[in-house]
Length: 512
Image (cartoon, rainbow, N blue to C red; front, side, top):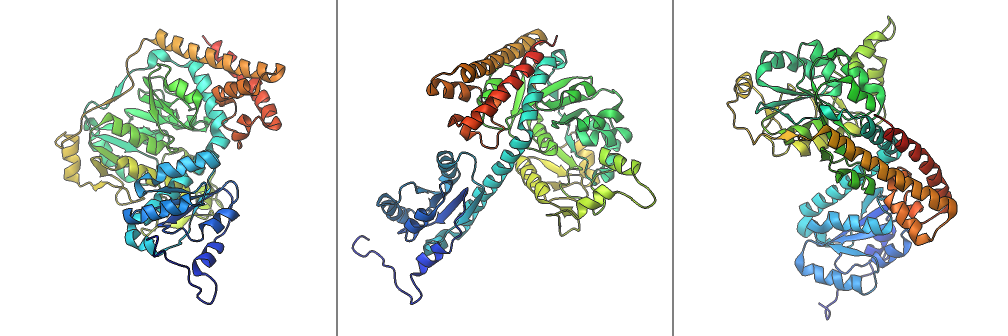
């Protein structure tokens, strides 16, 4: 190949590959993906024009072409990374960590050879996977900026006031698990659930618990993920009747008081953090879950952990024009309370016409957030023995259609089920309380150490070590990387945060 190296050919309108590369938009926070780079023509010009926060990732699926690309990159393309398709996700994350941690906003494909045609479907799959991963992580980053401080505050408050004596393992007892959301399709599923209630384990999202209770169906367990106080009204129709609570430790403290029964805890690892890693390793009975974002997707994850066949009702990730939730849900009741002769369901109608809202083939509506959660739900359901109680409504999920006969057999335990599991474990309440207090005390010490170092001064190396250890002080910043770069304005913000969190931690430690 060295002796017969392909050459660029002047087509009369400039070098075609170079023209295509120079026509590429040069944008910050961007990953440029080059499938089958071959001789890497044009990449030097692309590299010279890239903003500092952008990078190039080459992907080669053809083994015979990989050595050519490796040689071309080694000859003068510093920083350009080459990976095989199965290495692509890990490679792009490694590049991102080096260039701009967790900051890539988009991926742009750049074609510099015809080698892509050899594995077209594989390159399409890899590019789609990288793009989806970037979008999810970017949304998670935005959510962390908006909600991260509240989640941390809730964790600290909950550890200080938790009803540790209420923590018990939660299991489905071998019954099929019905995961109930508050979408419009729940209305049609309620008679079926009522008819077969004794043979089912009803796992309700918080927003669906009221609609179920009004229909005479008290959930076996209610899942809560909401960090704000607004969802407490979801539990009012239960009127204190026994239902286990599966609550994330980031949920608002009022949620833990709304249901007085048994309790199991999850912990959403909402960012890569030393603080969360220490909490996960604290010995407390926490079930670790990824940052799923939606209480419905979390409920499916919990159903997976409990084992057995899973049925889905009301998890639509879509809605009808002018009607976003099932009857009896908080959104539905709120709309009814505010109705007048001239204004009906204004919030639901506004949702039907908001930016990004699109109509699906079945006539239902969806938006980018719902579509993302639907994709996450599909991933959680894949590989499960899962059945559909939505009557054909809602986002496409990997579910089997359910006939009345199927429902009878499921409720009677006639279908083969997986190994039954449980959520949580038995642990002495006083030991849990001691573990929680020890965790809070050590985090308070970390905040005090950072405050003292910023006040009296220390070496840059020691300050960086203290800051990296106490990252809960700033991981919700929109620019957390500037803290470890010891930028003055970032450190002033950290000093204010250290004072705030010292107060929060000290207050949690004073709880009985």
